[in-house]
Image (tube, rainbow, N blue to C red; front, side, top):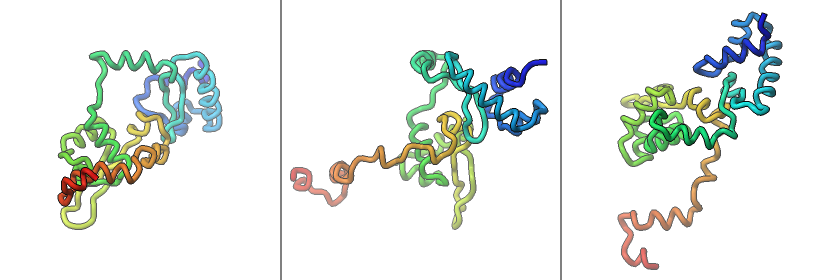
Length: 192
């Protein structure tokens, strides 16, 4: 009979999404504690000199490429075979991730351009889903991110995203950038 680590590695290799300990215990007919121990051991053994690593993400386990292989994977991703997400989709995804639950109208308002097609693309790729309806007239659809989004980013939860404050310029710079766009801005304001 094959050992538990070999079975788990094979299951995780073919899995299209992270697999929970409960699911692995059920499939292997092993106690949860044995599966948890085997996963920890497997994570250690895969982490040393192998091209893949095992991580616990969003409450489940999944195989990922080793971080040291990133430059080679980036070159591979630049080939025609790789499917890329557009900068508009990345921007829209960031708005949904940080503002969720958020409506289509709110995303469009924040981005300043119609985001309908981009939201549909992100939904089709499984990165966002409808998570409810807004109260009030029209009951707009509200969007949020999915476990696939967490998995692709390699984070356990949305709270693991970097704080937005780290990427926002100081108030003085924002004020200077916005000044020429204000309707009441005169040429005197721009030269002072």
